Amino acid sequence: MTSQIIPVEPFDFIIFGGTGDLSERKLLPALYYRQRDHQFSEPTRIIGASRTKMTDEEFRAFARKALADHVKPDDTAKKDVEQFIARLSYVTVDAKTLKTMAEHEAGHSLGPVHDTRPATLEGFGPIGPKLLAHLLCGAELTPFLINTVERNTEVLDVGRTERLATPRQAKAISLRQQGVCAAPACRHPISHNHHLTWWSHGGRTDLDNLIGLCRKCHTLVHAGRLDLARGSPLARAA
Image 1 (cartoon, rainbow, N blue to C red):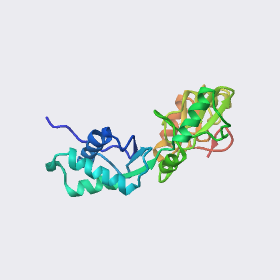
Image 2 (cartoon, rainbow, N blue to C red; image 1 turned 135 degrees about the vertical axis):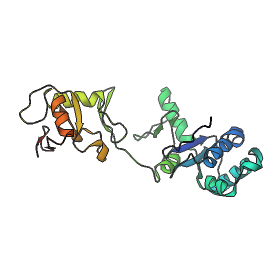
Image 3 (cartoon, one colour; image 1 turned 135 degrees about the horizontal axis):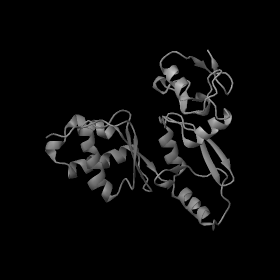
């Protein structure tokens, strides 16, 4: 039985401690094998990050040596190596920014903290401006609409990151439509949250692209027997 190699969606892979022993011996060789097996899709990037000052070319030279030392010669094809190396770049982590943020979170900052806090990378924590700028370069950005009341935060717009309306979006839609279907003359309760621009056509899961419909009207829309267009918060017949 043979395993199937499935390419993954493009992503940014950040190696914190990118010049360290773990990166050299394990991570870079393992990532190279993913390249060799054609598991990466464009424009996947692999970013080394550490406190060591280094250029992109110096990090790529470090990676070449790592592959030469820790990958079997029979497994290294020139084309695969060059494609892998081309994915690599490097950024120096801003340790001062991370220290300031850590002090602020601990409540004993020795000085004023800027109003604009460092960006936060999920699963890691605060990151400095250099790494942030590097990630944003060429990245696909999704704006999120946030409703914050004191310590409570609600995400109301999620773009293309979620196909179905979130519970908070469903609540906002129900309040907006007083709990009833948005189709003209229908007074049935909402059972589905429908994308005005369909998800399959590139529609976003944002409040201004969502309306609440009853089960029957939702079925009619997808059957092409009911046409809805944006108008007020309640959709009107097109």
